[in-house]
Each structure stands twice: as structure tokens, then as C-alpha cells.
Image (cartoon, rainbow, N blue to C red; front, side, top):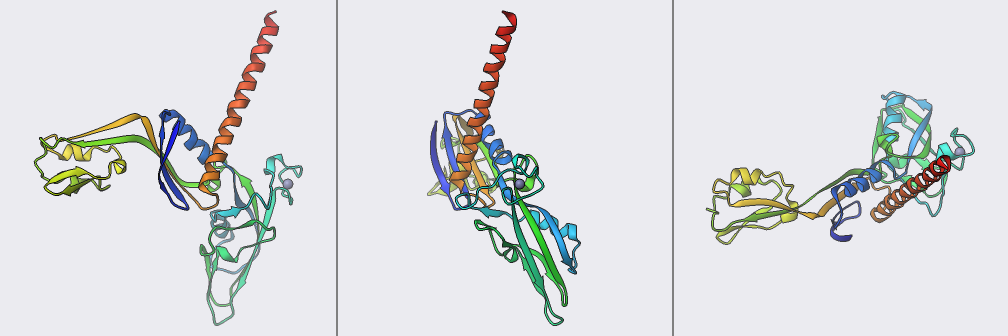
Length: 278
Ligand SMILES: [Zn+2]
């Protein structure tokens, strides 16, 4: 397998995987989405709420605030594996408090940055996510319990906001058939084609999503859209809670652990079947 990087930003990336099947790319996608654990607020204890929103509404919003969790500082158990039996203790739960009030002259917006973690190594990925606007003489006081979870339990634990793969596109123009009508440039919202000098050229082949709208719009039939079956384009965007590289490494380690478990179970079953037949 070969990996060729196309784009890398702090929260998103795009790369080409060579010599893998689409099924394997989908495995990586699904494990990243559903199996890589993240830390998210699970329970909210409302001590005081005179804001315009119901307790449930605020709790729901708090559950959607991505948290940054530094595993070098704090190592947490999954609640289902913890000795506390999942009730919540220092080993599996991080407490965050929030307290804000206004006087009779002011209004104020409660932001994610108002959440204060009682354990080091945990904080919201952004301080600027609005939770609720307090009017004059209103207050909000909460205790939030954040726990590790996986996207397969609830989408709030998904570490990525978008993750996708596609075939490696090869859009081509037959210059002998092209009559320079420019219909392909007008219809392609991805900017794959451009007029260069007196002819139309493919300038951004990797932006092609193989929708083939250009092919339908091209009356002389000058455009062909092929793909390279040995290559797959993989792209994703994180919610900012984890580094891109550690997210993929985590997904890889989970996949290896699953394959090991399957192999061990299979070997045990084969040995047991052999013993039965002897
Ligand atoms: Zn616990």
C-alpha cells in the first residue's frame, strides 16, 4: 500500500491510497467513524436554570460540544469497563462546571469557554460555541459529566464531522472532437476544466467526483471519465478533538485488534471441533 498526501490542514486531510480495495477503504472509514473513542459530555446536573431554554435543550447542546482530551495528561477508562460499574468516578468521568449570571442591566451569552474542567488535560476545542443567551437577572449553574464513548453508541461521540472515499478519477478531453463550446466548464461546479489559450483543458482532475454531468453536456462526445481501480481518494474532517495522524493510527490499531480477536476465536473453534471429532 502507498499513501500520497494531497491536502493537509489542521482539521482536514485528503490523500490517495494505492493498491487497496474500496472495501478496505470503507473499513477504515467505518472504524474511524464508529469505533475511535472520544470524550463527550454525557450527563448534566442542572443546579439552577432561569435561562429561556429548558434543561433538556441545554443538556443536548452541551453534548454536542467537542472536547479536547490529552491522553498524556489523563488516562480514562470506558465507563462499562470501570470498577465503578459505569456510575461515574475519577477514573472514567471528567467533571466540568459552568456558572454564569446576569444583573438587572445586562444580557450575556453562555459559551463553551465558560465550561471549567475540574481535571487537567480536558477543555472544549473552542471557547466560542454559544450555548444559551441569558437575559437580565437570569442565571445558569450546571455540573457536566464527560465520559469516553464511541460513535456506534451515539453520533455525538464521532470524532469526524465528514469522512469519505471515492474512486481515483481520470477525466480526459479528446481535442480533435472538442469544439470549444465550454459547456463542460459551465456545468462542472468542481472546476475540473478550464479554458487554457484556445482550448479546454483538464486542470484539476482530482476534484472530479465522476458525476459525468460534463459528459452529458458535451455534445461532440469529446469527454471521457475513467478511473484508476488501483487507487482510492480518502478524505475526512475532524471535529478538532484529535490530531489527524493520531485519529488514523487509532483506527488502524482498532482494526488490528479486531483481526487478532477474530483469528484467535477461529483458531480456538477449529481446535475444539477437532477435539470433538477425535
Ligand atoms: Zn468509573
